[in-house]
Length: 376
Image (tube, rainbow, N blue to C red; front, side, top):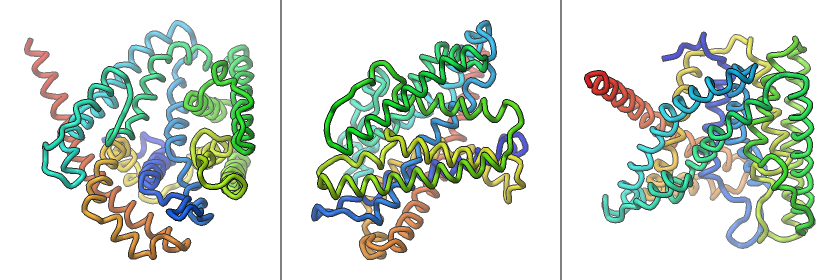
């Protein structure tokens, strides 16, 4: 196991937080209630949950290009990235897709093997898309795009004056497009569409993560100023999300999409970058239980792989409904908070246990395959 001394404990803790936010996103209480009204209290929690996957994208961008400082090293790094991606992300996720296809009927409370959904496996391998109970693996499908475009991204992400100037101009154009998209949602009209000429939502997070990496690897800056700036961005982003989503529902009704609860809006870029800057500025702090955070951070990917099937099984066993009934259907702040902590904590713990078992099995499988190949 990689020790806490060799890892940035703040980033590992941020991975764990993002992982728990992903679980919360998949068990979240929708802001729009069954009677067509909406709960601003639930909107507040949905806003806090909204930074889940963006944090993972920012972490990826923070590290992905830091070893590329010249064109001649890009292809060498490319081969290493592809190899690591296949070994550490894609093949484990493929095994989980196969497992999910086989046990999907059981997850939903039906007999095992009653309806094996091999179509999900076909789509995952040949269409690079995630469906059904494997739908949360869209993150891996997006990561495939990151890897495919790595040489181009690595070229423009070099920390050189000319590269920085061009990349940052295009980043600003992409953020301006997102601002226009937010404005379109608020007036419920389609006016602009610059999506074909700017970075898409996912790539933009990746590149902003790279910018933050350049910031921290560059000249010495006041960590206190970065911390305060991160806190300000995080608070402002969440206040904007809550306020604007409330305004949209009040003005246009609840049939519209909850745009500001997703990762496509400018306030989410603000809040996710804010919390990321906050944690990065705490790099040198003496964390309590650093080995615990390093351990959980190591298994955060495996928790992510298994959490959705755990949720489905617990839902079929009525565990979610039972916990929600215990907390008055999630009507007040305290009730909503305890629902997320209790049900989310159960899902997190079971997913962690499954992840540990799976990681041991996968490591043994790789070791066995290496021995077989060496014998040949």
